[in-house]
Image (cartoon, rainbow, N blue to C red):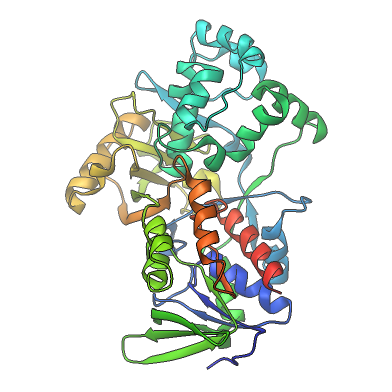
Length: 454
């Protein structure tokens, strides 16, 4: 049992949000204990080695911004001794493909490419000339409404909506532009135009890219596993917290495992768990906060890691991957060219692809049995990438609640939850349902939370 002084912190949840908070807290001299309900740390981050192939079960990468003051990811990697195991995406990964008319087209990366691109019609291209003169909207908008107002319907269908599906597995007609893509929202707020804002931001950064896509030599699970190993005396797995209370300034959490149970006490508690799990623990303290937490929707996703012999695949796989607009007759959200993205993901003369199915726009697609899902996924991959024959292997991963959805009113709901819980001193919230869904976002939020507590 951890010491019960005010400088002790109990972190509930051993995903990357909880582990990051715990790591940065300990770096600041706090006594920390982490309780994780699963039998391993990492949450949705997981990596397997199968037949010489490195298969990601959750996030395949994250975006790092070296030299940025917000680069908590870089600081965590350095402090855990993982800098030498960091791997950057291959140069070919700068190409992104979007389907239109059943064919994949590369997203343009320069003004000349844009003019030549068959992905958008000439009327859609000319429509962009008027974007700097589009007026602002006072009320909160969905991403779909915002994009159509500023860029037009074609850009919504063949650029913005596929991006939203790829990042959030979300429905642009429901997600809040202010909550889900705040940097895009800020371009309009500050500059009055997305185009003018992008030009201004590019000039300030010297025109360089916003960051670099990274992973680790042994996959994304390297990061949470390393943190867990370096904090092994402070991290307990197979410990599901079933009750949480506070008495005389000290928090008490009762937990259960497969063959044991116990109680932890601490001056502070960090709830780094999904919104519904947080709601269950907070129900006795604030039923209204619990209700708001349960209102945070999650999108279901099925991921398929599929390996082929290289000669079976007709597409050159010269990019990051592809996205499929919902206007196309293909069920997939998209796919990654995993063995192109990072070296060492598959043996020579073979390729590894990662396909995604479901999301907020097609949740029913994830409910079939494994055989049915595999058949649909392989059929879509074969049509999209000109694949012949059967795969070497298929690894399905089901995530019924994969990604939280920042729908309209999300920021107000989060603010209301925080206000309702403010009277309970020493209680802190940190998970992907607030402050960003990427691995880098979760680490940045963990560092900020640690600084606040310390």
